[in-house]
Length: 206
Image 1: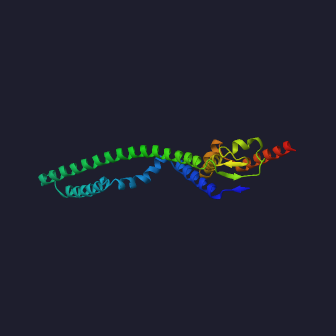
Image 2: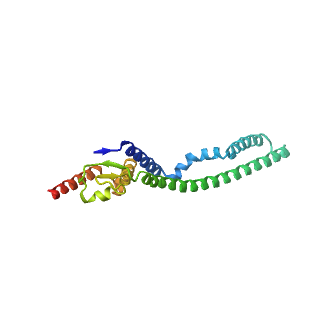
């Protein structure tokens, strides 16, 4: 039996990573990416907001220290500055909220395209490379389908291995959800069915 360890492991890791991202949620994952995005585009709105918050706190302290009756002119002037700074902070928050929502939407679309495109290109790139090579006749009439698109009978194609890895990864990452939905991937059951199929094929050949 021939096994391409590097191809199998790399395919498994790709599927595991993609299923993990899908399990965590692409939308929520964008929160970890957004700070790097703002750094890349040199967005200083957060620094400006922090600076204004500090100034706002100072103005609040100044207002609290003034008597609005005896020092009304100073109090009114400090109050106007306070309201102006507060207005600037609210405007920055509004723009930041819109920017974050827009980024999350774009990131989600790009991430899903990238994930499925990666799997598609991986299957195309290694379409002629079998993941497993087993003795001829083990799969009987299914050999043609299991080996597609390698064209090598007695092999399991990388396309089939991608499907298996995807199901296994989903089961490993979120076993509770799979059990509750009744969609778990039972490796023992799969192995048992495979052995039954092989034994039946051998009996037919005899």
